[in-house]
Length: 252
Ligand SMILES: Cc1cc2nc3c(=O)[nH]c(=O)nc-3n(C[C@H](O)[C@H](O)[C@H](O)COP(=O)(O)O)c2cc1C
Image (cartoon, rainbow, N blue to C red):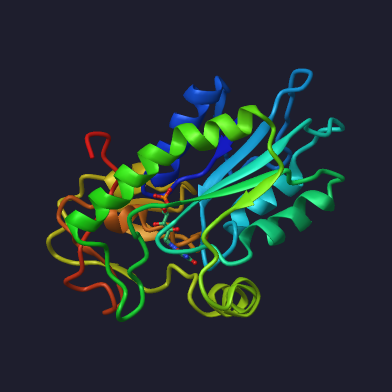
């Protein structure tokens, strides 16, 4: 079984591909589920596929995994995380979450995909050429990773980047403390009240009030609303004004 979370489609793509390559069921993480159930058949692997947020598994994903009600320990557990650049010590941090359940992380893989984080000055989406290059490289890597999962390899094969420990612990704590908020989201006059932001929010955190989106305080900054808006009418303060949008599209 593969459990996945995805804001802008990158992780959903990787999850879909892996699920078909290793012939595994695909289950979307429902962050609102207070006690998720998990039933694996004898020897069935468990995979978690999600983006990396501030050099760690998004808290909503690790919280979900912590809440899973199951006395079964997966025979083999892997993490496949997507990132724009690198993942720091994401596997080690996530391994601790599993350890607290009496589970073990057997393998971790990173997939460098197009950038979705744009909420800080200096951050933007990749050029179309860079997006294509990253997606082609991931398409090539997927069968090799699937084969290693099928062989039940014990391996950590991730791009860590510079100062991985600092980023995964110190920067992550600062990021969650200071930057993960929906208080700065605004919609401008170009909004056409299509409701795509509301429909696509994986946390159900947006509703249209008088035809305009309102955010309700339960946001992980996945940026699905920003990137999917057909009018590019949503901004996060001033930091995103004039920046690009990206959603994974199958033909890429
Ligand atoms: C809130 C947030 C934090 C992010 N943090 C990182 C990071 O620490 N390192 C990195 O390489 N990419 C980071 N990214 C980029 C995403 O991990 C990357 O684009 C991912 O593939 C998006 O997956 P998705 O389309 O499934 O949501 C971040 C993106 C967001 C929205």
